Amino acid sequence: MAAQAFPDDFVWGVATSAFQIEGAHDVDGRGPSIWDVYAEQPGLIEDGSNAQVACDHYHRYPEDIALMASLGLDAYRFSIAWPRILPAGRGAVNVAGLDFYDRLVDGLLAAGIAPWPTLYHWDLPQALEDEGGWTNRATVDAFIELADAVSARLGDRVEHWITHNEPWCVSVLGHAYGVHAPGRRDWGEALVASHHLLLSHGRAVPVIRRNSPGAKVGITTLVSECVPASPSEADRISTTQYDGELNRWFLDPIYLGLYPKDVIEYHQREGRLPDGMNFVRPGDLEEIKTPIDFLGVNYYSRAVVRSATIPEADNEPRTIPLPDPAELTDMGWEVYPDGLTRTLTRLSADYEPGSMVVTENGAAYATAPGPDGSVQDTRRCDYLKSHLQACLAAIDAGVPLHGYFLWSLLDNFEWAFGFAKRFGIVWVDFETQERIIKASGHLYSRIVRDNKLPKEQAA
Ligand code: IFM
Image 1: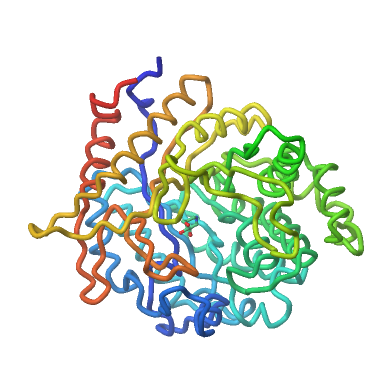
Image 2: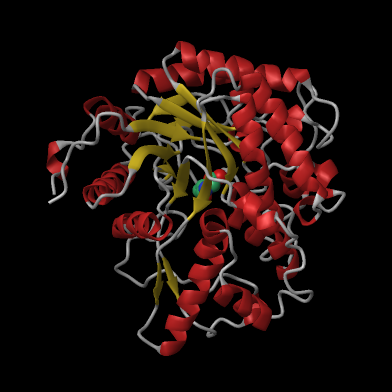
């Protein structure tokens, strides 16, 4: 039976990202990002919205810090908007952009909340995209300029850094499936981009360490437990391939210094590596394998995989939601907490990361304020409790899990879905910018303060 209390030094936080909440898209010298440009194209954002205002966090950050303090949180994971710091992607630093994060960090520290910045959460400056974006090796150097500028300015106060958020989404969703910015549909480009993302991670680690002595540095990857849709051999093979594409393609280079052979062969068979792996230059894998202090894990659901009943030409992930009675969130993602326990346990065994942190976990439900003004998001409460129970089970099994960041503090701009999907534990009225702490926010606050799950959730 899993213990109910979390370790004494367990870190409790919430996560957001710059593009999804900040707004202020053209304020204080910020340049355009690929997501600004993507969102302008008709039909690409489900509700036709854009993130020019979003949660207006750029102006309302003191109020949002106060909200977090009222919830009793230990830590806040946010991201740095690259186009605020280097509006042209590289070169001249926009001091006003750095000033914003300086104020944010100071405000957090004054409220007793540890800042956990992520350097890249998808908002590449458009100027770099115009030169090839992540498919261009020169973008690695530009990222190092960003890492250097930001860690030099904040490094005296920040103790935890995350280089990248979910490189699979950036490379595959953005370059192969085309459902994220920059909207390309070319698997070859996706694989080149993935390598440059990983290389930029490995190269940034020593830069951050130099500017922020003693700080811990990690990377965040999206992970799923991949299971076959049926016992058929075909589904089993596709499941191994999907696990390779999603999980091992990123984690093997980071921890083992190699790209998995079976996944290279799979991509080769699919015609995705016309020039082989020649984008990997001598020394790259050693740099990517630079030791890090923790692995950030983003877990939302498992992936149920079926084989080529979905034709390759569809260019879509070969995953399917389970049929009823599977419980789905508004994203159509199955609520599957056991997959979190097994994923943490598996990653811990396969890669021995030393320290792991759940850097995102949460659920989209549209529950709106009721007549009394409160938001009774019971299903999110259940999701939260069951996934925290899954964390406890992993800790009980010996996983070095040291923190949990709930996605997300605020309802926000959910990328290609616009504002239609609400992940927040705080309701945001996007007309008035009013914030209301939902029932899940109150529940989370109680869990954080008690450092344990409420009694009714005992295993
Ligand atoms: O909103 C996103 C976040 O930006 C990255 N991880 C998944 C979340 C929910 O889709």
